[in-house]
Amino acid sequence: MERNFTQYTPPPSERPYKVVLKGLPASTDIDEIKNDLANQAVAVSKVAQLTQRKSKFPLPMFLVEVRKNVPDRRDILDVSNCCYMSIPWDSFRRRPRETQCYNCNYFHHSSQYCDIKTRCLKCAQEHRTSDCPIKERIENPECINCKTKGHMAISKQCPKYPKTNPKKGDPIQNNTTQNKPNR
Image 1 (cartoon, rainbow, N blue to C red):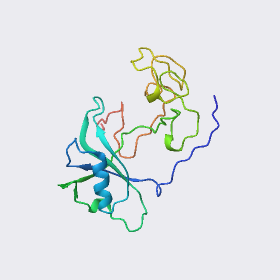
Image 2 (image 1 turned 90 degrees about the vertical axis):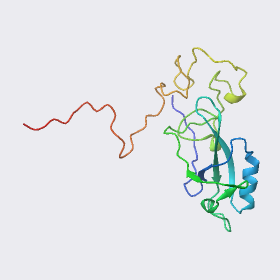
Image 3 (image 1 turned 60 degrees about the vertical axis):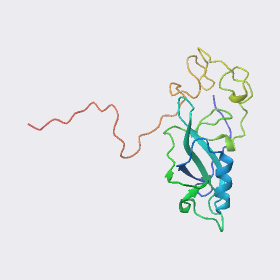
Image 4 (image 1 turned 90 degrees about the horizontal axis):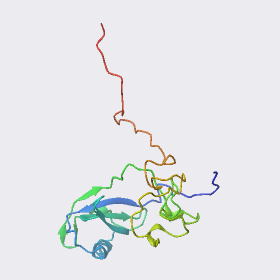
């Protein structure tokens, strides 16, 4: 099946700078953080609370996205307090996964610039997965990308899931050759 569509990925100069804010309680309101940083002349575009991967339990860490190239704005890393508390900053490290669109569920682009027809992961209808009337877990789901049963389109088991190439410096996986001394 050939898909003919255009996609737009913003150049790195237009992408927001992402940092992780630590040192605040998990109960801190996101709007308070955004307003406090804005009062300190930081060009914040988004603040989101990070959660544990499996349990979705809110963590005392917040992802802060800052717009680049905004004149007369303070560098986010120069800010040392937020909401009356001393804070450390950490770099944001993404999970090593391929980008997958939440709108169409194809790979290599995000929903922000997607103009492809919306597809639900659960029922393949034209609505977002979050708006799906099916709320319970599906025992034997059908993948909307490869049309086989047993996994969803977000699964690494899908044959259509992009294979990632190991980065330079990463250890080689499944290396069967062993170093043997010369005789």
